[in-house]
Length: 429
Image (cartoon, rainbow, N blue to C red; front, side, top):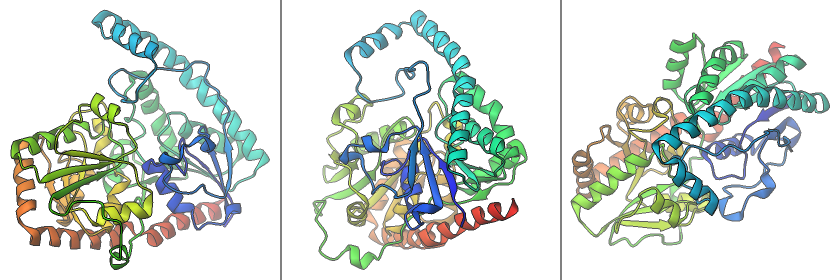
């Protein structure tokens, strides 16, 4: 296979779902067959936030090109900030100051978007001339990577593949950024040699929105030997309790679903039911987002093999998506990176997500999880009670989940689909 260039705002060894998917796609690929490009410095990762090893391929970090550092919308991020930033945020919580701040921020974004896109595209063109590649694969997740990758590929005359992990046109909370992305999305997708999406709901969305035929590459996962996982593993839970488990980050894309779950646990008031969170977020971050409950137990983030052993010991895995957020349209076509891992581990999954999302529809269609698709605390409490009391149902859900992982998400099968797509684009030149 000829070398291709992959542009992503985040790369392995990050613990983000997108970085984990990229690691799994490329882990078995010879280093000379790909080139990684990112704004992110992968050498700066603290060990506790590393989900994998570094990929061996050549990795180039784009230079800092933004003339200004933008402060994100207050209330969206949960990371602790320096004192002066917190004081600034308290000031702009006042209604008039908040409106003024947003107008200034949007005005700056209006100038930054075309400037940053063109500057990044020029950098990419320079890289592609120095390190020739047969095609450019640009991933969503950053507002500038897709248009910059498209422009650079056209300037050097090679195919362009748009890899849409999240809905590019609607994933931005800033109005100006969303407007720019929606303007760019039609010519990016229609002009691309191929558009890759992560699920069938996204195929329908892009067909209806832009008349674009896209290719599904599910977020791949290993399908582990369950017997091997159960041989002398560390004990993660007290098995006299009923252990509900979530692994990953918690932010506005899931937050109100978690609030519903905590309310349901409070309503049930059964101390032996525990919600275990395996996350790299701090206690302070969780408290800031309203994640407090006597039923909740926080654990450190686990690397992949340990995480699989832990998930196998859970009674139920929790898979949430928000019902009210700034990116609600994006969640319709979202495919959480952890979804395949949850399915592959063969445990019952509790899905709490809107009925129109890919996640809720997939689990309901294949009967491979317990689905609560309305923001109804009573319904959530009733489903939890059913899962708690009916072990046979949990076992059956786990078997069906495992079958879906083998059919749609198995690592070898999905990787073969991805590289078959790239080979077709290479040969079309």
